[in-house]
Length: 195
Image (tube, rainbow, N blue to C red; front, side, top):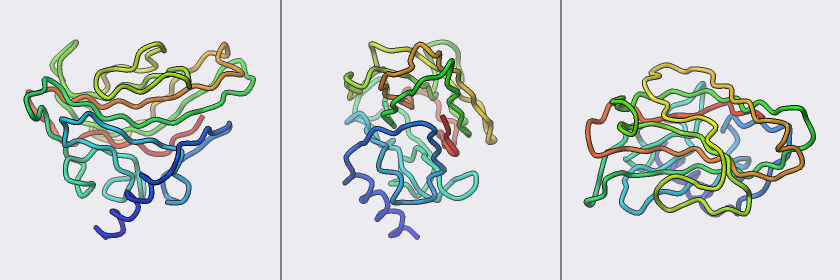
């Protein structure tokens, strides 16, 4: 199982990100159909995004792991950094509609200690020409959802993207932040995404 997971991870890293069109759905079950995702992280972190079968609703999912994909646990600060970041990005071309619904299932614990503190998932949308940072939060776009944690069972998330984005190409970025304090397991797992 471990070697199958590592093969999937290595296969994903070899893909060049493509732009997807709508309607879009992703349940992470087909390893040949996940290459549209770019998975990156800050250099000072053990936390990375993986696509695999450790946790899913059901089967495979996109999840944070500090152990090369063999758990859904995360680690706080490393190497003297105040925070660690991990990014999962997909580029989407929005056709013409009055609005777009981004739906996904999420399971995450994470430390919840108030504004600007804790371990949490946020979702951003930035222009396709923007660069996802190597640390910190994406800029030049909009925050679709901020500071999600304390959801220990699978929950449906629905984000409404205004029709003003019709005809544009945007990056949707899932960002996991872990601060240097308390760790409350597990980290985030995302499944069954649709737009």
